Length: 195
Length: 314
Image 1: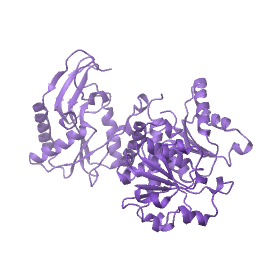
Image 2: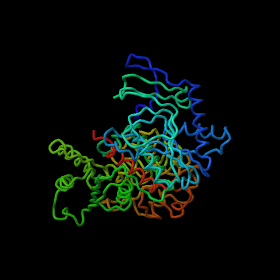
Image 3: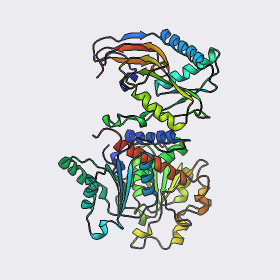
């Protein structure tokens, strides 16, 4: 999963070029579409909070919040939660560095929380994020938004908002790049580079 | 990282990673009613203290508990040590019981290193895997104290690199001073030891720091000053004429504290002897970060346990 986040595209090592799934304008349009869906599906909620999963989920959450405000919704507050301390695979890898955790003022009690991540695969990151979230308060409901759903679920978790469904094999890698940290918006797939 | 024995084993990147983890852990626990993380569930952490301690032992214990490790305290008084059991036998016994981490404080310099070498041999022989953390060995090192001091300086000053930090007092008997000199130098700070010649160890010229005997001349140029406790319990000879004279020559009183720059921070590793190395009014002033040091101590020790115990064994 973590490999999916490293957006340092370039295709070195495999010899095959990365295949583009979403261009910069596709990414913008996808975020706009998800924002519209969020406005629709959260119309009756008083307090909506977008919580991103670092690092690219947090950037997506910020962009979604801005888009929701732009399209006439009430701007949701944005936070970020690092699921690392709650992962079930810590013992299987070298020590992971911890990421940012910041909850919006007012917390998440009785709020409608939308968790935001870039790529959904096994569902284990989302499971850990749900655990972390529940320690910070009791939301009214939790929904999930992802830019790419690549399948291979290992837990009964499904996204409420999906930017693009991409059927993949386990040996493939999804590379998400976002302007804020990668200099460009792009989603690509690298064949035969995964585990 | 398998053991934490000496700050000289830490390069700048590793030390910074530990400090970053400490900040993240503080963040993760901020504003929560239940200060408990599941990260070290099922891990056993044993503190083995052959010397008196309040803050270090309690802070390691709280750090373990907040990360859901099972923590057990062994003190020399009231254990088989008082029946004559050797350090090696006690530590192997604790490993055999399944300790994932033994945190040791011992009056002999090098005790933690000995423990770690036995633990590594035991690992090859029986497959048990016990991390050793040095919580103070004689006059040698106290790595987690130096880490929490660095964390506090980073909070207060924004950075450690490029800052000038003075360490004042009984350097000779201080493992805190030694660990701080090496860690702060690794992190890019300029360290000045300020002490009477009788309280400086042999070989201090080789340390990555400058030495001065004049506190008043140094104070205006310091970003932070760390006051050391005069360790009367380790003193066998006459190191200075009287405690009154020491307080006059090296104690941090109001007049001296005022010589620090506006942003100057006052640190003390504790326990303080008020009126000796530090005046009560300075210890309670806004410059003093002494309680912040204690708070950071818990997060830094959580970070150490996280780096030793959370990931896959090396």
